[in-house]
Length: 336
Ligand code: F6P
Image (tube, rainbow, N blue to C red):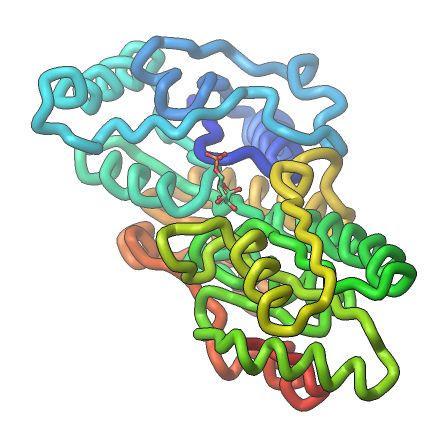
């Protein structure tokens, strides 16, 4: 069998470990041929495809980013326009020309949508969820999330120094797109006093009261962790808006930090390396059984898979029954 592999959407720690898991399992255990497709779905349009061997996948376990390159190409978007209208058929031809029996798509929500559409036009696909946002529906955790949480928690730890030394409010903005997973998990791990997420509406007076109450208890500083996706007026940047409002509300000297792409860079944690390895291997197992059109998923402690149609177009958000949120609330952390 011949399989193709591509990585699409934002990069994150653990993609290379997944490529390694897929390739090693396919080459060593199943005797398959593997083709690397460069720069996401764009590589299928431009024909950027090359054979992967043991040599080309050496040293990948700990490496950040993706050796295959990535893009946010959406071949099915605006298929009414003449250029995009051609893309699905160009992709079908590329797959046919290389004799690829199944395509492994590593990506986030956008990738799951495109993968489901590729199945509809007759291309065999298996997808693997990848994102620091942890917002892919159907998997409990996507690889990249644990690494991003640990980078963000480390940054929050470091902000405590300036917060306490200068008696300031420090606002840190973390990524997460429209979900609050990264803010919740890094905020709790980093000891944030206030954690704001898109899922929970906030009240600036309540945030101000929390900061003033801390002062009354002898803590004249606070750490506020803000998800980039919170609702702000006129589309203002999350951290900037919250910092301005806090300063106005409390009179506290307030500073903001936007962590940005640092959260997506560098080596994956051990957890992500192992999750990526297991998901990569499971993808090849599904291919070997001819079980196409599925997304590999972590459910509880088990690596399983779900139909691609079940996840495509859905978003996994933090809900009120989240254990970390419940315990955080009981501890007096302000969530808005
Ligand atoms: O989905 C991952 C992510 O890093 C989000 O957290 C963020 O909103 C987005 O990608 C940034 O995208 P880009 O790389 O296109 O700037």
